Length: 239
Image (cartoon, rainbow, N blue to C red; front, top):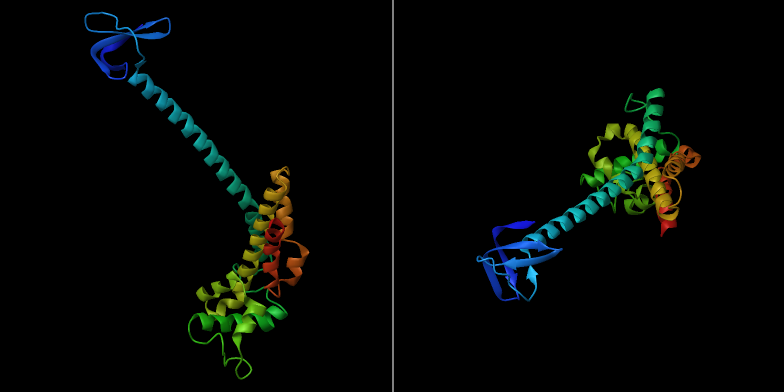
């Protein structure tokens, strides 16, 4: 059928025909001028057809981009399942045990109560500018806190004490332990997704939760710095 005019077509590179129309003859585009005289030779470029083709290609590219973004979002959500489940289990345990944040009780015991919490309080003074990390007179008549920091406290999570009042640090240990176990399950899930790509996502999530709540963490969280090894270990295997 005819393509309605007036339209603009480029013919033989330099010739531009105005006030013309095109007719479809057996799948080939033929150009006529205003006196209905057929113009021979050369290749005709249909601006409208090119625009339609470009629009269709853009639509295809846009669909591919949407699919890729959906896949990325699903992968991210899959990675978040284990830490969310670990948090749910820990919060349920805190609730049943009448522990903070549902009560004032803390899971702190043994070395955590005797060493870690007092050192956390000292480190808060360092962060608040009330004490020096190199020479601290709050312990044993004066000591270098630098070495103590790396032996007991060197973790990115330790810096959260900056936002906690001293009288609440004992209770805050509940949250700190939970955050580290959640991170351990997250890095475990990353390991399974990177190194065992054929493993079912549900099984990988279950194994990651089991890793985050394993007996090692349940027993040795009293030395909270050891929990950092739990979330670093899967990354070490990946490397």
